[in-house]
Structures are given as C-alpha cells and as structure tokens.
Image (cartoon, rainbow, N blue to C red; front, top):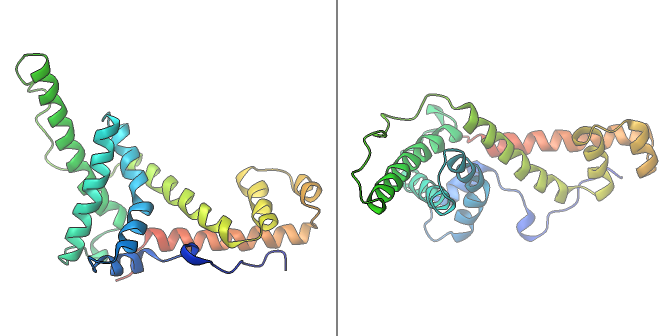
Length: 208
C-alpha cells in the first residue's frame, strides 16, 4: 500500500541507542562509534556555541564529551537507571565548556599582556536543569529521526505527513498535491507519526 514501509538498505538500518552503546563497548567497532557520534554530536556542539565558545572550541568540546562518555561507559560508570542519557552528556559537556571558557580567557589575557581575569573562577558543577540544553537536544533528536523516517517510507507517504504535520497545510491542499483520498492521507499521517515517536523514544532512552 501507499503507506507501506520501505525495506532498509545497508547503513540505513535503524539501530537503537541501547544497541549502539552495547556495541560501543567494543573498541574495535568503528561503526558503533560513528553512529554514536552522528547521533549526539550536534546538540553538544550547538550548546557550546550558545555558551559563547568559538567554532573550533565547540568542535573540541563535542568530541571530548563523546570520548569522555564512551570511556566512562566502557568502565561501567553509566547507569540508565540513574538518569537519562541527555543528562549524562549534559554534565560532561558542561564541564568541558567551562574548561574551554577558562582556557580562552587565559589565552585572551596572555595576548593582551595583562593578568588573568578573576571574573570567571569556574563553576561548582552543572545546573540541575538547562532548558536551553533540553531544547537543543530534543530538536536534534527529532531532526535525526526525521531523516531516518524519510528513508523508511515511500516519498508520497512521507510528503503527506510533512504537509499535514510539519507544514500545517489543510487536508484539501494535500489531497490536491498528492492525489490521495482523505482516508489515505490520514493513514499515511498516522503511520509516519507512530514510527517517528518510536524512533525518538529509542533514540532518547537507553534500556538497561
């Protein structure tokens, strides 16, 4: 049918975050590291940018955060029961951002030929919640899952979902563009929406 899923091909196959992390335990599994980095690099980099770091520092922070998490995970320190993956990554990223900020201040003070400012003495630890981080995290996860969903459905099926859910078109406009009945559009919208919710949950939650 029109709303049928397309079979995965090659690297298009979706892997849950739990599986990615399990595979991350194997240092030789380069593919697991690449999938992990692809999935979680963007929100960390964007958050570092929001904190005022330069582009190269943002890239360093993202890379260092992912490596630090992978090392902690391999040592058995990550416990999903103690908090969501996003919270763990945020804690690591916050410390890396703080360190990069202080390093940049020392560099600036040195270049200016003056004394290091005591204005920023570092932080005790990350704030318990950061709405800014959570917004960037959720947006990034959604974009990642949308790219996957687009691969999994026929173009017309995804376009129906895109028009009705993402672009907020009237159903009559979708009927006209796609030559689909209201019933077919409703089915397409439901199936893509359901799959997207599944992917977002799998991406954001780690099962012990």
